[in-house]
Every structure is written in structure tokens, then in C-alpha cells.
Length: 277
Image 1: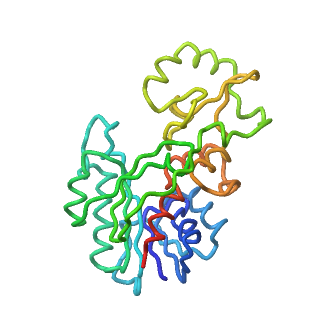
Image 2: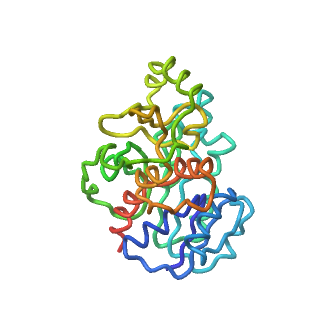
Image 3: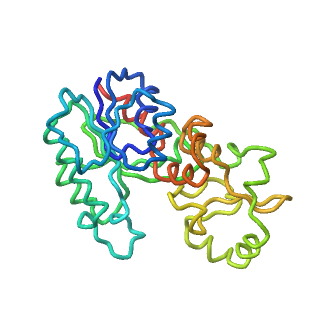
């Protein structure tokens, strides 16, 4: 199967296809973040990188069997006060996915995005309604997303009934713990942080949805123990996204967090792909 992945990130589609038992002949990826590209090439060196999606001539790509992508959601998200939807600079890149679909006419296709102000507009353009799936079924983190596809999915993933404590590592390195100044700020603002809904402290069940800005914008999932308050490690975040531990080891922690907050939960996508005929 020849695959084109737009907004490829760290190539979670390749992991999902492997787990679904799909043989990939050629995998074309469009991505502009150099750190994400490095992760992909470290793990899948045969990936053909095409660069900026706005500069791709889709008519030059022959024989694409499957088209996948998670177009940028920032303008579509309910957390964005401007609510520009597909008129926003980032979320308007959805139309590049639509262009690729119309030109390439792939046998299978899959688009992921958040529940947002452009949901109905995307559905009209793709002439199909989305499937709503939450990663909490296959992970110890919540992540509700919409999936538009022509794959006839008629079931939910098996509920693994994982909670955050199931995936926490023991004896983590000191670098994951917050310094004294950060601890003071966190404890003074704890109630406000937790009330925002995308921060947790010792979450009893599910971690909050991972974001690209976690730990850079005073949000994320935190663990408090006898040593202090710490972030989730990168490998714990990999586990929450059903990604093999060490997958992002070739880049800095900062960019690993960014990539993992931006990517797909692999086993959700694997479940969808298993319905592919």
C-alpha cells in the first residue's frame, strides 16, 4: 500500500498501520517541524519527506492508496477565543487535505480533528459524519477526538480500563521534579490550575489530555510524592499515546513533549484501520 500522510508529526500512522497488519510499500509524509521529522526518520528511515503541505503538487503523486492526516486544530478548538474555525491560518490547512483527497481519490482515507466550531463545515466538505472516540478506552489519558473516514467502523476499541497509576514509573530521575520556585508557584495557584481542566495533580483515574504546550504554559499532569512535585516523564507520555518507550529519544524533552501532545493515540487509529478491507 502506498500512503500519503499530511501533517504527519512523528508518524503515528505508520505505527498504527504496522499494528493493524497493513503492509506499506511507500510512505510519503508532509511535515515541517524538524524535530518531529527527526523522530520519524530515526524510527522509519524509509519515509519519503515532502515538506510543506502548501507546496506539494498532489497530481505528481501516483498510486496513493491511503490518505491520512490530522489537520491543525488551533483555530477550530473551543479553547481558542477567536473561534475562526476554517478561516484561521492554521485550521484552514484542512483544505489541503480535501484537495489531496479530491485529486488522488485514494481507496481509503482518514482525517482527525478536535470537536470544535468547524465540525459541521468539515463534515459537509468530506460528505461524511465523524466518529467520536476517546483515547481513555485504550489509554490512561483522556483525549476526545473526531475521525472522519470512509472505513466502515462498526465497533468501539476494547476498554483496557487503565488508570494513570498503572503507567507511572518508579525511581524517576531528579530532572523531572520541579524546582523550589516552581513548587511554590504551583502550590499557591493549584486550585486555579486544576480548575482549568487540563492540569491534574495525582489524577485518581485518567490523566488530562496531553497538549503541545504542556509544561511550557503551566499546564499538564503532575505527580506529588515524598520527593516533591514532578512532571510526567517523556516515556510516560509515550505510553499514554500508545507509542513505544524511547520512540522520541532523539530530540530534547521540550520538543518530545510538544510532539507527543500533538500526535495521535496510536491504538485508537489502529482500531479504525483494522476495519479497512
